[in-house]
Image 1 (cartoon, helix red, strand yellow):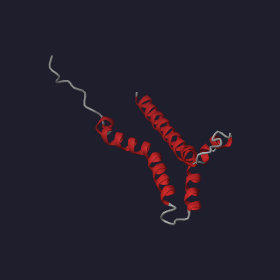
Image 2: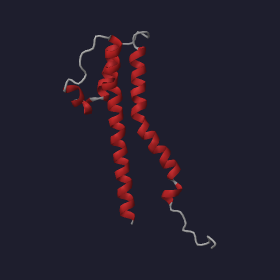
Image 3: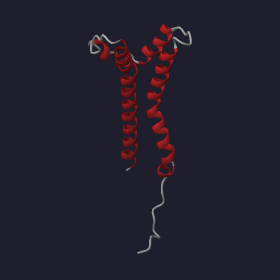
Image 4: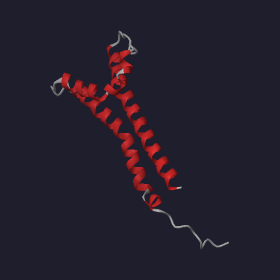
Length: 119
C-alpha cells in the first residue's frame, strides 16, 4: 500500500526540535544558576570578594523554598566540609531542582492545554 496520502505535518511538529532545545535549556537554567553561585562561593575567598554579598545571592535564589530551612532539617555537623556541603545542597541545589520541577510542570500543563484545545 503506497503512502501517498500522508497527512502534512503541522507547525508544532516542524518547530519541535527548536522547542525541545528551548525547553531543555529553560529546565537546566536553575542548575546553571546554582552552579555559578556555587563557584562564586568557593572562589570568593581566594579572589578577595566580599563573601557575605556572594552568600546573599544564594539566599536570593532560595526564598520560595525557605520552608525547607525553617524546620531545622539541616542539623548540626562537626565536620566543616560536610556542613558546607549540606548548606550548599539546601540553599542552592534543592531550590534549583524545585525551580526546574515547577518550570517542567508549567510547560507540560501549557502543552497539554494547547493540545487539548486544538482537538
